[in-house]
Length: 286
Image 1 (cartoon, rainbow, N blue to C red):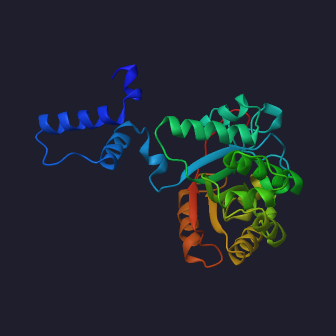
Image 2 (cartoon, rainbow, N blue to C red):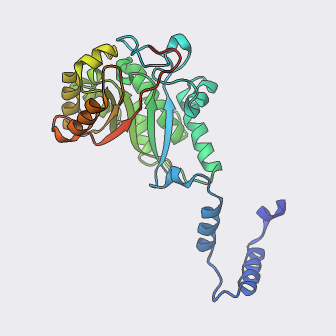
Image 3 (cartoon, rainbow, N blue to C red):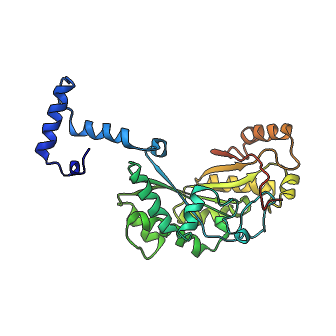
């Protein structure tokens, strides 16, 4: 196709459609909508990214240290120049680092990237990763979410409340906001705050259902914290996702099997979603 193809007149397009219909012996001329759908399905890259009709955009929080210190399996953190829990080699983290961890620039870059791949970006789920989000100052949390929503709105707002209000009529609508945190930072007070921030799903780093293992990991929370956080988040109508790590120090295949059984047999847990991270020995861990 020549560079002039983008400048075809309406009459020229209709003539081409007629020629193609005749050469292919079609029973009728294809409509513009049919052609648009056919072209879109053939030029869209990585269609799974919007298979559900929602574009997922991951935003990495600026570097800061978790209040309890560092878990023994964590490969990241401010001292090594990467977000907490991440190696720095992840695509989203590399992009964030290149953009100075600016949330607005990260969202704008993600929108442009999705559009270049042929995706519609009319419904967006924002996922904020990197560290214990709810342990950061409330002002920072509101600012970060506001910057993300402002990027989708295409206009700067004076507050998170205003940004969310503007977004209700935006062409790039936020269908959900997810944050990561720890169970001891996800109880009722924090849950109520997250509702006000427009958050709809909370991912909590449970990792194990054994207090001895949690102590060995230097997690800074107990099994009872997991129980309380799960109840408080569900009572506040959040979707709850657990992060779980099999093969941790002090565990065994038998213990891990029992843990997964307990997760769904015991009504104190039963997360809506589950992310499983097999234990790996990486630089800066241990």
